[in-house]
Structures are given as structure tokens and as C-alpha cells.
Amino acid sequence: MGGEIKNKVSAYTVADIINNMVLISEDKEHNFPLYLISAYQVTQAQWKAVMGNNPSYFTGEELRPVENVSWVDCRSFIDKLNQTHEVKEAGLVFRLPSIKEWNHALDLCSHDYDSLSQEERNKLLDEQGWYSENSGTVTHPVGQKKPNKRGLYDMIGNVMEWTDSFHPDPDNPGVYMCGTYFDDEIENFPFEWRWFASDEELGKQSWDEQVCFVGFRLVAEKEEDYLARTKEVDLDGISINCFRKNS
Image 1 (cartoon, rainbow, N blue to C red):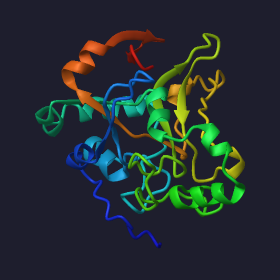
Image 2 (image 1 turned 90 degrees about the vertical axis):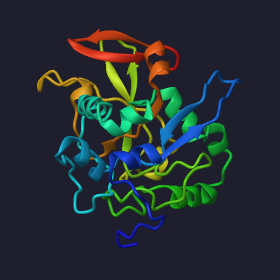
Image 3 (image 1 turned 60 degrees about the vertical axis):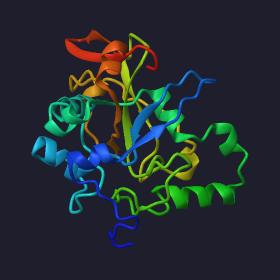
Image 4 (image 1 turned 30 degrees about the horizontal axis):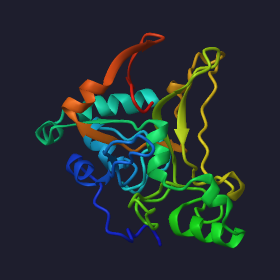
């Protein structure tokens, strides 16, 4: 594809972030309310529009997903994004998805995936995602592949994505990441969550890790709904908004 944007993606600005949200319908059976989630992973151009820099390892095309950003970095981006006049005028609050929201938006349970033949799995991966067999071991501009059933792009492949859900083990705390990335082998599908273990030698916790295969997408909701549903929690001195209902 040579970097050409197959689907004519507009994902450069804060306004594009707002305009590219997809409504996920209410699912009463699984206790999911309506929510908005990004059609695309946050791009390098959008990160630069908000933060004024580009920390990514794979540069050269602004519509590649931003990566090499930690969970804490993403929180800083979201804090600044929520202070922009565009977001305030829209009456929205952006945040990271919970692991349950992310998997619900993926809309592909392991049972469905397990029932596919290997040929059908390969076809699905080639159509919807970047992985070891088709990526050239680099990231690609968002939105070049087909979307999933919910209209979301790059939910498989390209980069993994931070969530706002935490691994519950107090002896090994961590932030969950969802999805797969450009160098994952086909055996790693379907798309199980992972987390980084803390690195005591480097003094790093999982939420501080910056790697070239993890980026993020956003969830948005009305400001009054967000405030009614969140609470403040402190984790090693970091103030964290934790989702009461879905985290």
C-alpha cells in the first residue's frame, strides 16, 4: 500500500478525535450501557496536536498510531485533551477504556474464533489486522484494513492498547493492555490481555513502561455521566480515576 490511506482517514486533529467516535449500543444482557469508543487508535499527529511532541519509535507518517507512550503518558495526554475548547464545547470527557469495554468493542469471542478454520483465521487477520506475516515488523497508518463488525479499525494488529483496568494481584500490580501488535505471531491470536511486570532494578512499574508496540484508543462519555461514575484512588502516589461499573 506504500503508506497510502486506503480509507481516506482524517485523524490529525482534536476535532477528528471527536468526529471519529463510534457509538456502541446498549447491551442489557451483559450490563453494558451506551458508550463511545474511537474508530482509530490515537495517531502521532493527534498526539502532537495535544502534547507538542512525538515520542514514537516508528515515525515518518503522521497517521501511524502513537506508541512508545506509557500508561502515565496517556493519562497526561487525556488530561490535556479534556481541557481543549473543542472537547469542552462538545460536553465530553475522554478516558481510556476498561478491559471489559475494550473486549466488548472487539466483538469477537474466543468461541467464535476457535470455531474458524485456519484458512478462515488467516483471512480474518489479513483483512483486519497487521501481524508478523503482513506488517513488515513496523506500524502502519491507522484505518488501512477493514473494520470489525462495530466499525472499529486496528482492533487486531498494529499496536496493543492501554486500558484503565488494573491487574488485581497486590504483589505484582499492573495495568492491562489489550489486543495484539505488528510483530505478533498468528499463534498469539485471539487477542488476550497482557500486562508488564514491575522492574525493581529500573524502578519501573508497569504503568511507566514505554515500548514501540503499545498505543491506545479512547472512550468518551458525557461529562456528568463520567463524574457520577468515577472515584479517586491512589496507587503509589498516582491519582487514578477508576471506573466503578466497568473496570
